[in-house]
Length: 117
Image 1 (cartoon, rainbow, N blue to C red):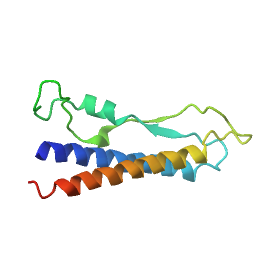
Image 2 (cartoon, rainbow, N blue to C red):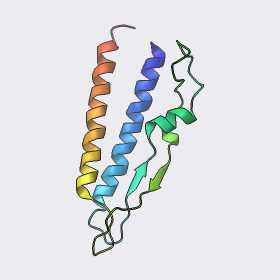
Image 3 (tube, rainbow, N blue to C red):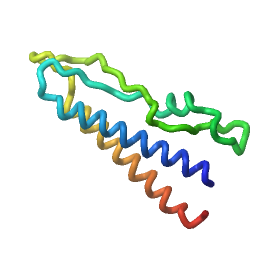
């Protein structure tokens, strides 16, 4: 059970960092020439750190490690405004909403399982 909590904590850390990246993008959305950043998918982070948690079944993935080692990169914009800004406030708000929704769902799973251990 503790391994499952480790995965939940890692995902919550990842979602917090994702929110920070998108909030920063949103703050820069009216700055001329600003470029959006994004964070590598959680699956990539888990794959890089695989092998640190024992598997309970041979078909299970082996996640583990810290999600704070993920890569943040600059995104090539689909559209660029007249000011040279390629950040869409609408897209950033949607990404923030998605991270918040996932975080709340994981917190519910965590809280529901606290009595199990």
